[in-house]
Structure formats: C-alpha cells, structure tokens
Amino acid sequence: FANFSGSYALNESNSSGDVNIIYTFAKVINDGVYIWSIEACNNYTNCNSSSNITIKIDTIAPIVNFTSPVNRSYKASSSVIANISFTDASAVTCQAKTDNNGWQNMSIDGVRANYSFSNVADGNHSLAVNCTDNLGNNNITNISFAVDTVFPVINLMSPANGSSWTSSSTVDFYYNVT
Image (cartoon, rainbow, N blue to C red):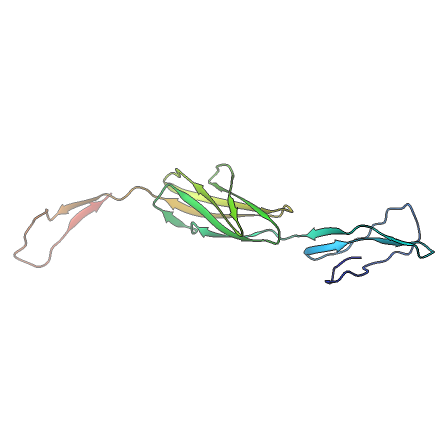
C-alpha cells in the first residue's frame, strides 16, 4: 500500500505464498513524500500490516540565485556580503567562499542566506556558494566581482586656483588622474 496517487491504496501484490523469504520489487517514483506499508495474508485470509513508513524522494539540487554582489560588479569596500535566495523541496544549508579560501557557513533565514566577508583585498575575486539539501543534493554557483578601495587622485594642473579670464569665454582645463 502507498499514497502514490494522493490516496492510500493497494500498489502491487505478490501471491507466491512463500514465507521466510525477503521480497524485493522496484518502483519508479517521482519526487515527493510517500507513506508506505506492507500487508501480508495467508491462505486463510488472516492478514497483518506493517507499520507505515514515510519515504521522501528528492533528486533535484537547490536552485541558487545571487542577490548581491551582482556578477561582474565592483565594490568600493573591503567588506563584501554574499546574499542569495534558494529554492528546494527540502531543508537547505549553504556555505560561501571567496577565491580559494575555505568554506564558511552562511546564516539561513527562510529561503535566503548570507555571509559577510571582511578585509577582502583590492582586485578581482571569485565568490562561490554551495547549497546542499538534507538529502545530499547540492548546487555550487559562482560569480565574480572586483574590490577597489583606492580613490583616484586628481591633479588639476591648469588653470591655477583664483585665475581670471578676460580674453575668451573658453577655458581649457589640464589635469591628470592617477
């Protein structure tokens, strides 16, 4: 007996009549939660049922979407917060890492997770998130981002501060940026 169609009903039968044998049958089952039990009857219609067991089939890994940082984005801070949303039929745990550093456990809030990285050096970085459901299906999603905490230096070479113009309304500015 099982609830494959939404109601608890007879699923398969075996009328071999043998006892003290382990019976096996294979069933292709879609993802979902099912209640299952076995009933055995002898030739005298004496029947006994096993206890119900619940089985869960989940073959799909969590779907992960980055909220921030956005892929190929620039950050002007050495603090980077990885924010994601995820979808799965089971409970999920997530970890995050930058570059080749170790995995860090993310805080989970419903269908969202986050982790704050501090002291991220200037330059290009990769960010990976690994979400795993409680049946072991996992999804590793990667993005890239850059950190640039150095502000440009502007050197205004001409005109000098306080200059006056009397011959033309066109002013040429000379500067360089480093």
